[in-house]
Length: 106
Length: 114
Image (cartoon, rainbow over all chains, first blue to last red; front, side, top):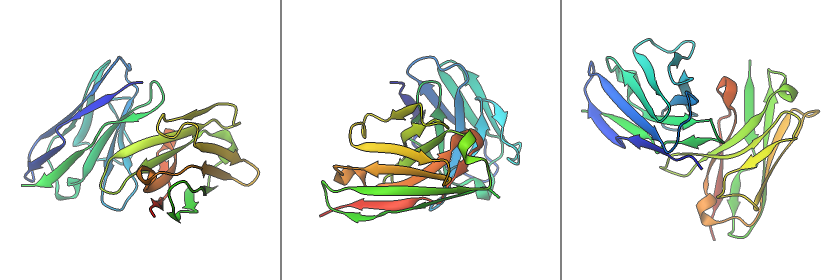
């Protein structure tokens, strides 16, 4: 099975900060990776698909990069509504979520 | 408007059984694959099971294989998850999802406890 190692597990940041979250796959998954944002009590919301394609309606401050085994989600300028938990999901072989990154207010 | 509405959650004793349902509307349910994803309280997301549009292909996470059965009724626009031999660690909010289009239900809570 493919394992997804997401880091960090949590981070504290201020509004306006640049934030980077990383996911590493245990084997190559091409670009079969999505990024999700989840707020408490809500279903996840996809931000990025195919590793770097921005989901319709998602602000352009969100971007994704990577291919193979290393992937990154970047928030260029953190906004108040971005404080949430973020997950990567690989769908190359079955489906595996990363452990999540909680982005908290500094 | 796309809607996925889960139901059937509740409190079950360890070793018990329960069936979750997911009613779909707003899209051609019979054309698309579906998934169940769960989230234990305060924990991360875990993929549980997949079923293709025609039910010809089915996959399970190792954690539920042999205990859970996914099925669908395209005539009723419904997805199901039959859960047997439930364990305390199966306690979670269960979401049905069409991951290809990022359609998710609101989730239904299963609590396994004595």
